[in-house]
Image (cartoon, rainbow, N blue to C red; front, side):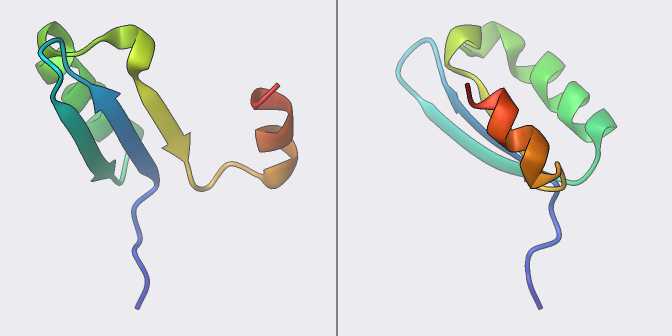
Length: 62
């Protein structure tokens, strides 16, 4: 069985920490960001939505 997560989060902390987490819902994602916001460099936050159609991914990467 494959991984069923929807969102993959890669982030860098203010003291050089690296965060990698996988979340299933948008609500979990919002809660995780709000819980860790004071520790993160928001410019270095990368969120990948695995269920986003490929057509939209192509436009978002530009």
